[in-house]
Image 1: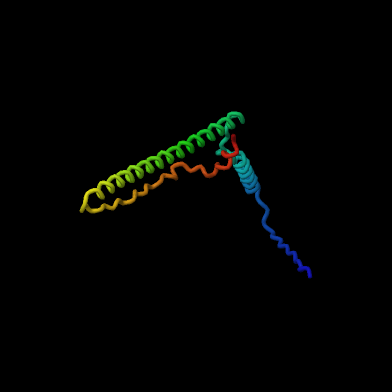
Image 2 (image 1 turned 90 degrees about the vertical axis):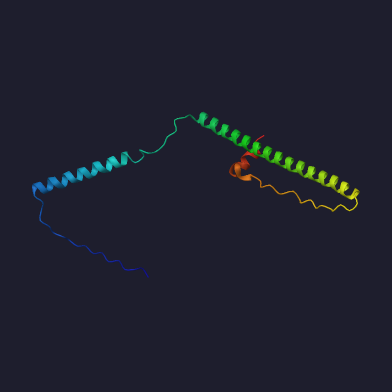
Length: 141
């Protein structure tokens, strides 16, 4: 069943405007139209436009990619160096412990010393985070 639609009109009668009232109404309508036009013209006044050519923009993107790649390589190299230093320090401690153990066992009555395991250093992984561009970088030769 379709809903029934009822139309209702209300007529309001008023006194006609005087010449002054009509002029005031026309002036206020003109002011409103001017305001609408000014608003429409100033709508994009804060829009930022980049005056560079497409080639310059592409060149900048390429440089940004190269910089990101260089930073990533630098971070990887730093991690490798830290790991090397930790391994070298662990090897030094192990050699010192072994030398001390052989020396301690050669002397009768000397107490055995327990060497504590090397302390873990906190890694600095989050200095550079390039997770959003990782797929793009892998595809390039």
